[in-house]
Length: 84
Length: 273
Image 1 (tube, rainbow over the protein chains, first blue to last red):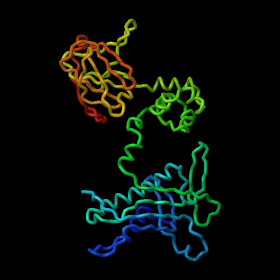
Image 2: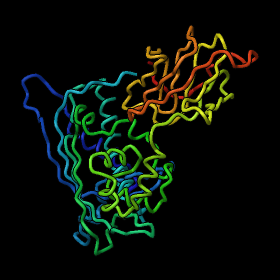
Image 3: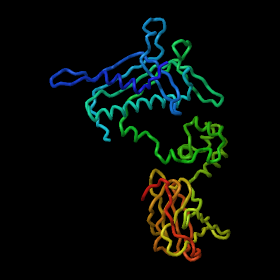
Image 4: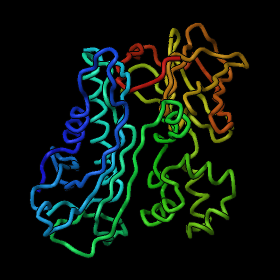
């Protein structure tokens, strides 16, 4: 069972889309990803927490179908950074 | 096995993760302002829907080896600040007394919750737009009980605090007089009125002495601090959010001389006027 917080998985997926940008190059500005997701819930520090990660290898064998699916749309955005 | 949780907690847990993702991106943007951010997130969850003894719907995500689960599709999208401001209930509504605090039984509260009524402010709003009989008919709560709760939950002043915080001066209601008396010692600079629902949507309450507005130094749902330096005896009127005016006779001569001065110990959150 997956014990990676969903936020970490999503951040990793978004980070994977980021690449270096050079002047004059073609860049990806929007991406839509459909993927199987292994989701579970549990209590961490007393709060209900959603865990989610790409499914483990058993799904690739075709023996078991993916249980949960996700679709995310990400876009290149100019964000304002948080000051510390 | 993963935990079964009420549907609200279930969605909140996912939302918290999405918020966490956005927060991380905001930190990342310090060094990399142009980055990929989430615009929409949809999730197809296979869940088992259960209902507990209290009628609370609980969801449990299915595991890969379980069959017969229901499919729940949930979509999340980014919202703008104006959307939040337009659609979020005012803080005063959220801070309003609960239905139980107004004397309704848990079962009656649950019946009203099915109509989207979770506190007294929402009950008042619904009753004013329709009427108590309609609310009673649709919720199944006795109309007499509704009226009783509305009466208990209306804005009110419970007591006047003079001097130190621990000294609560009850309002002296004379049997033969409609106007209660508030005794204040000479030189007293501030008067604190305590009660419930004393402000509406962050609006300052209105306080007058003999028809002249008095300055309010701070206020919240549960208290009003009035600046009474250099005032004399007179009729103190407080206009409550529901339009009802409470009047007191302010008397500066009868209070004992030994009382300590006003101390300001309150850590209570208030709105400085």
